[in-house]
Image (cartoon, rainbow, N blue to C red; front, side, top):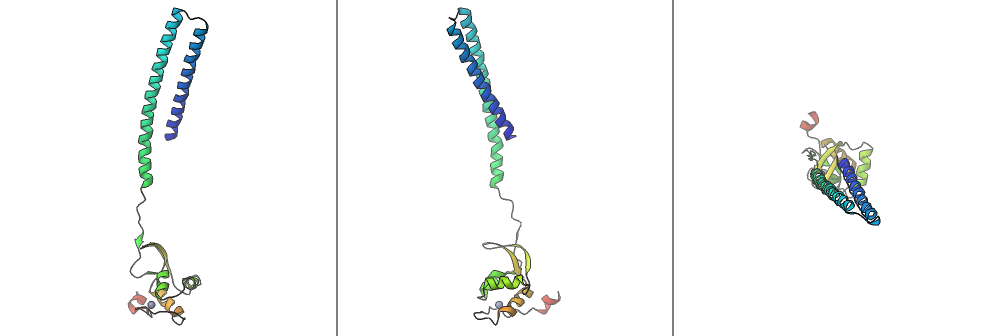
Length: 173
Ligand SMILES: [Zn+2]
C-alpha cells in the first residue's frame, strides 16, 4: 500500500515536470516566432490550464502525503509495542542452577559439565528471573545430585538446605 502511494507520487512529480517543460517550451517557441495577439491569448489559456493542472496535482500530493502519514503512524506504534511477555516466573520447586552453584561457592563451569554429562538432573523450560531468563533449573532431585557431586569438593559451602535430601512426599508424588 505504501509502495503504491510512493509510485503514484513519482508519477505525479513526473507529470508536473512534463507540464512545466511543455509550458516553457511553448513560451520560447512563441516568443521566437514574434507572437501575435491570438498566439499570446492561446499561450495565456494554456498557462492557465497548466496552473490548474499543477494546483490539482499539488492537491493530490497533499492528500497522498496525508494518507502516507496516516498509514505510517500505526506502523510505528505497532513496532514500538513489544509482544506481551507470557513467560512465567520460576516455579517454587525449581532454582536456576547457576545461582545454586554460586550459593554453594561451586564452579559454574564444572556444574555445567556435570549437567551435560547427565550427572545432575536438570529441568528444561523458560522462566523469568530478576535479571533475565533461565532455561535450565534444578528440581529436588537435581539439587540432591548437585550436593552428591560437590559436597566433598574443596571450597564447597553448605547452604541452609544442605544436604538437600529428597523429602518422601516429593519422591513419591
Ligand atoms: Zn545446599
